[in-house]
Length: 185
Image (cartoon, rainbow, N blue to C red; front, top):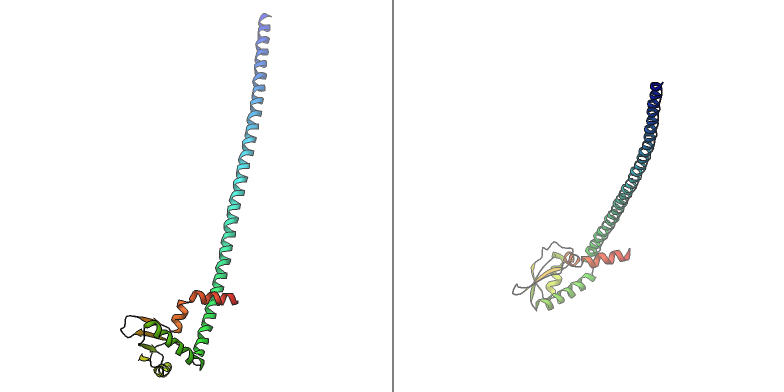
């Protein structure tokens, strides 16, 4: 009987140890499961925040690109309108250069050039302007200037030059002309 009692006691201790191990296992399993769930939730939250940040960055990038594209399109359209208006202005100047009013302007331009260049000068001009300039006492060096109107003047000693062609006047006043065109639109 003593052996039987000893055997029962050993079995009870074994069963008690197994129950203690199972309880410890269950507790540790619960802790591990809880920590795993917390880690999963933390990782999911990080992924969600990362995705939101990435989506926000992408949204900003796309919006920025769209705004830039819209500005580029507006700039291109404005530039085309300006070029069209400048072309129309050149046509108006060409028509003006064929009018009677132009002779008065040519006289004023010759006077201006003489004042700036110090008296006698020679000019390169259009064939159609040569007679008017000669009547004004201006020396015409060349009458085959390819221009809408106006002339190029050179001082008698050749040290000073003044370009009063319509093309050069438009070029040197390009910003003012463009601003005036944009202001009228």
